[in-house]
Length: 196
Ligand SMILES: CC(C)(COP(=O)(O)OP(=O)(O)OC[C@H]1O[C@@H](n2cnc3c(N)ncnc32)[C@H](O)[C@@H]1OP(=O)(O)O)[C@@H](O)C(=O)NCCC(=O)NCCS
Image (tube, rainbow, N blue to C red; front, top):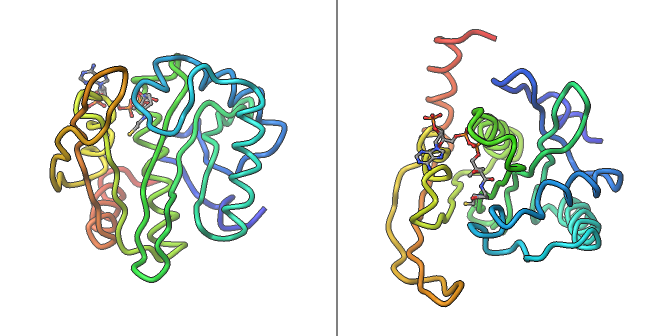
């Protein structure tokens, strides 16, 4: 494993992010198979099978080698289990931008874990991979996800009206963006408030 991954420090002490391993397949499957996860994501199939988790882990290795995406498991430090994913995908090397994605197993929601994991992956993207801009598209009705972005200082850039057709209706997507300098300004403020 690349040493830079191991060095990432979480503001929530009980989690870390790290590349996925094949032995994570069962935990990925167990946490992602809930309809509540696929409901607000575009790529995750429902129903979800264990084979989908294995395919996804293989894909995460391939894209990391190619540097076209960085997909991390969100790991609970006490038992090393993966409870969710944070990812930087669609990496545009020339323009140094990419798309942020994330999900967590339902029983871990509303504990601040996704916000902390997003902060970690942004630190990696901006300060280890030298990205300039990260963006994310969220279903307008996904209040928890909008909050995760806002807590990480993403700015609303627009609404993509009726841009996704799902379950028989059109959905509005909110598009958010964050620049490296704005992220790092927030990091400095956070560190002053909460020295680690
Ligand atoms: C989106 C998701 C990752 C959030 O994970 P999480 O660990 O619960 O997020 P956090 O606890 O860090 O932050 C969630 C925030 O939303 C708030 N929130 C949660 N549900 C809410 C609701 N229904 N209405 C208003 N606010 C809500 C929480 O109170 C919290 O805000 P706070 O810290 O100011 O109190 C999780 O819900 C999930 O996996 N959803 C399914 C997949 C998904 O939507 N992925 C994102 C695709 S863009």
